[in-house]
Image (cartoon, rainbow, N blue to C red; front, top):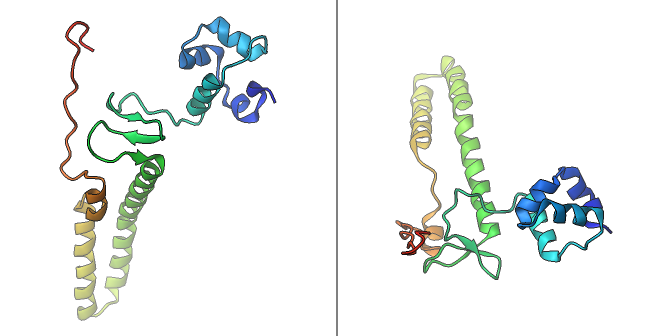
Length: 169
């Protein structure tokens, strides 16, 4: 099957100019690949797939963060490399955390409704729940200590980039 005829690539609407930019080739080369006159290299196919699936690291990530030959994120330190599954898990955990925080106003509203008909003892218990919700809302998201220890990320600071003397890169 033709690479560019696959529904995933075709539905993405990726242009020849974008293909040229991603693969570091001319627009003319990208046009030849798309028309089928020239066979697209498998490395270029992989780059395009990564881009379409948005699996390429964003520019805002530090330059020394790379995916090594095993497909693990290597952050240029003695810390063990992270697999993409760890990064996805972190993103999932962070999303869940924000979902919990978004529910706090609704929970407080429900506590107000319950407090209208509650006894004094029940109101005291409800106030304990409110205090715990305030603590939760003020708490920052962080990985559990056992995971921080595994990845040696506790109090981790990125090393300063070393600049080349001639070019400054």
